[in-house]
Image 1 (cartoon, rainbow, N blue to C red):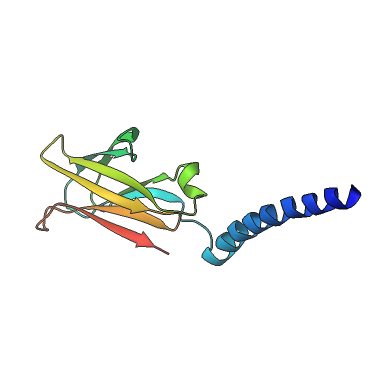
Image 2 (spheres, rainbow, N blue to C red):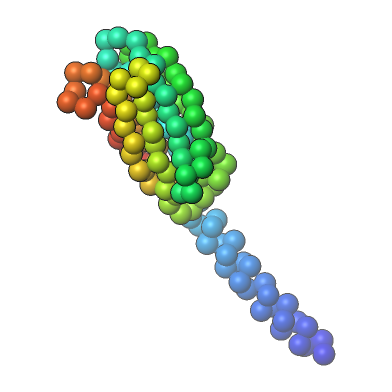
Amino acid sequence: MQNIKKILLFLLIIPIVAIIGYYALMFLLGGPALPDFFEIRNNDAGTHEVTVEILDLHNNSIIKESYNLYPDESVSEAKPFSLLYSIGMKNYTFKITLDNGVEEKTIPVSLHRWSTPIIVIDWDNEAPIMIMIGTV
């Protein structure tokens, strides 16, 4: 009876150690996560009001904030805990409104803990709202 308990305990410990080892290895090899959920940069000569709404996979609003950005100013938001310590990709929809609806853009974005979307505002470009994904 003692041998069966030892074998069952051993068989229970192996998957737990394997799972913990996998996640520890991913965190060690991947390095630290990027801290920003997103960053907004105003590369334009004028001041702009930028509203960012982020929806999750089920179209639930995660964040909706407005920012007044002066020329060459940038602002960022910290990543939520669920993305900061996640291994897989998460899908979001970014709704960006510039100057109370003068320009709007809705973009689906897939992120992981090592990526950050950078929203660039610049009226000199063909598209005044651009999103780049910065990845480590």
